[in-house]
Image (cartoon, rainbow, N blue to C red; front, side, top):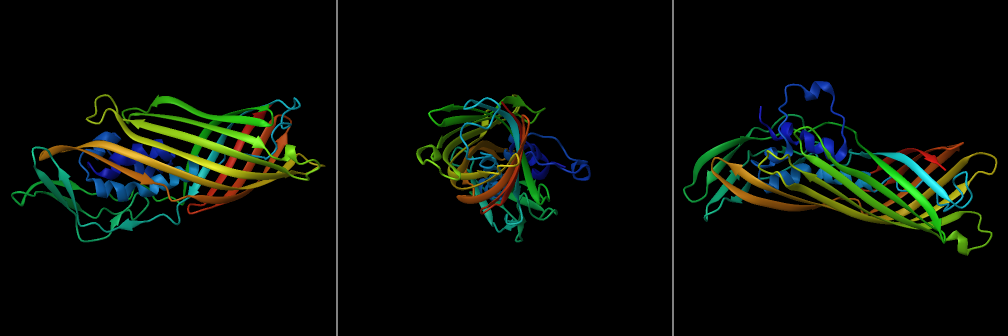
Length: 334
């Protein structure tokens, strides 16, 4: 069963680290992302994967801080080192579940155009209905004759939350400034291709300029990039997905004097975009296809609490945005 659902499964695993129940994973092919996109039109892929981009952007821009205090978190005064993992989850309740599309037109080279005709029904997104809407016909525009047929996907997964786990290391301070790095080296995932991630955050204390301020204030800027490439034996063996985004936030926190508890919150402005490029190929022709997507989140407000036990720090927060997120972290502070 060579459906887009089966072949986009690795894409969702790599980008959103979604957990697929065993019952949904049975009897599926394991073709990698490049093979899946090679027979699907641009507009269909664009609409189908938009919820994935929304969830990915919401997740990557979550869990960026645990307190507004810059310096003084660790056991060594002024000098801080944090090593931990942020687990984030984008709520999918507001994600689009279906879309309408009549056809795609593909330039197949040598002046030949192919029209992909879809059934006259609601087409599910990756987080939509489970059932496939059927098949699409590939028509040679010049002769108006059917030259191929491709099956259409059902939803990729039905989940109320799309989780992501990100390793991160923080260090500081210099003149009231610290930095945090998120990093995943290029990692091959079976035949699915390889993924890499890098992010950098720089934060500066504002409360240091206001003596006797009862709370901690700080501002932070973050930039992150993610890349996904196809496997070497795929028609799309190069970079398929190039995603990047940035965020700016203002933070506030207040520690409880008699307990190792800190309440924190913030306002954040963010942008996240994905560039997808692949080779479309069927028996009727080959073409290079590319499109861009922007995640729906632009502004979020969040509130949370962190607890420090010796050198172990735990935190959890909730953010309100176009895609609401919940974030939890665990790390070691020195």
